[in-house]
Image 1: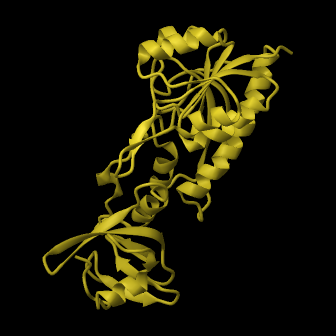
Image 2: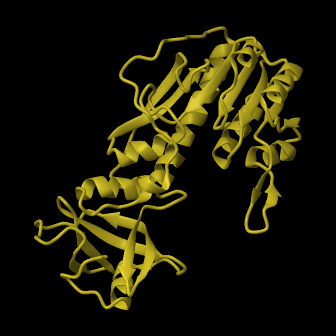
Image 3: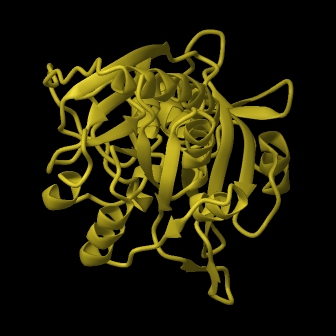
Length: 315
């Protein structure tokens, strides 16, 4: 079994466990490539990408190419047998993919061709999927369109949100990457064309986070679960001429029979600090909320603070 020379490409926190696994695999990580430093915070201080910071900790050569030309030059300098890509955040041109002896493997958090794009875990939850998984596939010129090497299914639990599902998929993906490296090193390489109906998983927008209470409750719960990392699902409350965004930190489907009322109306305050809002179909139990400019709180405390009661509309 040969020892592979790897180029690792990734940027955010989620890619860090994969870099650690690659570095501990017995293969050589010749260099690490991440996106350039970005300004963050009110002071717009330049912040190093997590993968770049980890490369320094592991004493690996690090690159931060600002454009396609610099990316190509970095990969050419590394002369890798194999590229490993996890959430790098940019398409890699064909001429750069050709620089690696075996090509570039990408870890993607869905069962391709389902959920091609930047937010596969979030959209799987939003759309109420019962099963998802991880695909290790070979990059080509398209967006998540290359042939499949390995894949593993993972059930989506009713208790899952984006954070818990991501955590399990990362663990599955680490094992899949380790298996993939071992198989490439042994010369056991498969390239199976993707089969099935493709579906998109584009980057989430502010409009995707908005809860429309005229929609069915299960659909809204999926949105709350899918947006548990980063920008949360939210609704807007208008009172006394002021419009306030209210983030929904946790929610559930209530037990018991469906109750009547106009969509957006408060149906009942439940034991444990939540309250039920009428939806187009069914009701949504809001458990914890975070109003704009305030701390996270039990939903019932939010209701009491506004002196809202069953029958009132959230508007």
